[in-house]
Image (cartoon, rainbow, N blue to C red; front, side):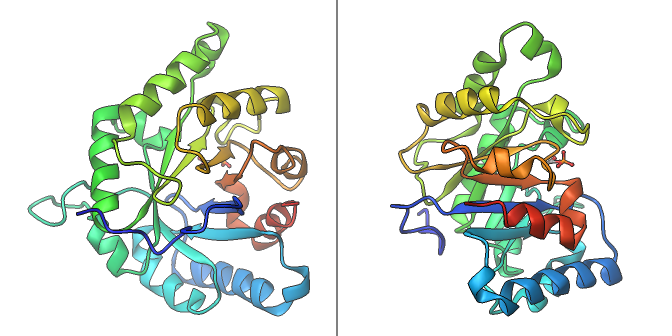
Length: 257
Ligand code: PGA
């Protein structure tokens, strides 16, 4: 049975979600300093709080430590990937149940660094999403085209196929978040134009359950965040590099209208 996630049951208003994907960065000292700095900012100035939900996705080794720092703050915790199975002989993998047990409410799945760096297919991402739902996690499913695909004007077809292939039946606004991350924009300093982002998000919205959050990711930084997060079709951001600095991540979160 798929458990209802403890997250986003009331989706009447899509509060923006600003997620920090730390990737394979952070030893205990850096991770605790970053999580503490963000927790302090979030809990100190309630009146100045950005109108968004922050989510931190540290590497697995830091999950328990970051969970303890975030405890009671309202900042959510997520994993960066998971195996589809609940447990078993899968050396080096982490199960959705383990992430939930470590305090995660979300897990990033199908990130382009998994799809392109580890050859993950849509079918594999789909199995992981099913596993995430079994454990009560919200799946943050990443989709996005390469530069060659955008130049060939096939971006929409590619993303549509990733959505169909990676998202199982049973997706709702409460158990799924989609992150549109053009592969060429990740870590490159390049971002899609606001027009292209709005158009792609509108296309994705027509393919997912009403109320599903659709994030933009790819070189989001304090300079471009206001424009991106100001788009009605954008329900938040998946932030990589700029999430490793508390001031940058906080500045981005504060751009939520
Ligand atoms: P970036 O990464 O912000 O460093 O481009 C985004 C991501 O990969 O999720």
